[in-house]
Image (spheres, rainbow, N blue to C red):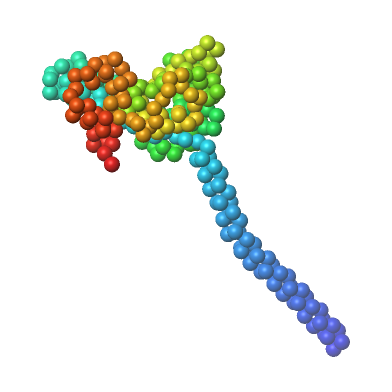
Length: 254
């Protein structure tokens, strides 16, 4: 009995030792895994951040701008309640309201190879346009059909009316039609930023474009016959003032 009891005791101690060893190994592995997880998560976050940074470097989204719509709404208030010209009030009010609404959701997006137009939710941050599919803006039925994406190498000309006080942008491409499809868009986005990106990414315009640093009311007036006639009736002091005016008063004051 004593020999059997001794053997039983030794077996129990051996089993306890094995169980303790397994438990120790399990705890060690748990500690190792928990120490690895933060490093793995950090590497994952760094990878996502790197991809986002790369995307931001490749893609430029031009933010919305309400100046054209706001000016039309201002004219509506002047012609209606102030002057009682209700037809002009209605026309300017409807157009100004429409352009202001479009400015809240239409974004020009420039990738490495394409100019794209996408729609975001009104009031959403401009960064939302980075992940928005070009299908959000639908089929461009008004200007030739097809999706709102045009490869840079298909753009044969572009114009900007007017450098200094932009209201309208135009470009012509051969992707939609082989003989060329023109596109016109009101400036419902940051006009100067749009101009700078077009200068850097699109093929050269058929007409030489001034540097953004040269923008002024004087330059804008020089672009049209009416503008040049207006300048002819200005005195020297007024001509000096329009050369110094680089943007909308108050809105563009630094």
